[in-house]
Length: 314
Image (cartoon, rainbow, N blue to C red; front, side):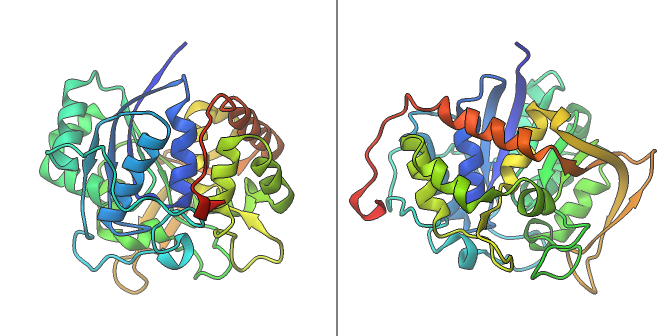
């Protein structure tokens, strides 16, 4: 079986956490490194959340702490969406046993990529600050990156938000511009995928809860993470879409595009032009039924995992 070597850059986050749980047990993945960044929650909480996930699911991958703020501006957080601790209705412990690496994310990414064979793919699930800093400090690493898959951008608009803006991009648009202009092939999985196309219905969320212990864990997070601004109750699968694109690209329809990002009038606004010669692949649709079937299949495969939920999380 071909394995995809990846670096996962993340800001857990409910959607990050759900995505990571599946990634940890995916036999198609060879995870070389996790890096954290300030985004959905502040860096310290994001790192604690990631280390707790690894502990809870019995994994011990290297984790490097990254940027605590955007490159040139103050960094917003999304605690109003993900909750104060970042994991929705699930309350993580205040401290964890695992520790991050002594080296920072940029140093750790640089080392892993330069020692690799040019086949390690960064998957960016949060703001692009770590990648922007890496490419600025070590431009020679560009030749070692075959492509970057990222969740972010909203070329079609999202209800309740200004058209063409997503949290991950507006959090550090300058860093995103550096990534855009690096020349590295990019795959852009906009928030539109998870919110409008591959979302979980209320009925399916309760089915997830009743599937196994992992489903109960996901449900506890999801129960405080229902999407706003939609007439129905739904859970977005934004980051999971980016990960599934890597392992099951046939589920998505893509078009090549050119992307620009605004840094001044509406920082983070993305402009997309369809161009067959563009170096960016934009996912524009997903085979919804097959995506959800795969989601449930992956969940059922985790039925061997048993753990008790803390009393205050039941």
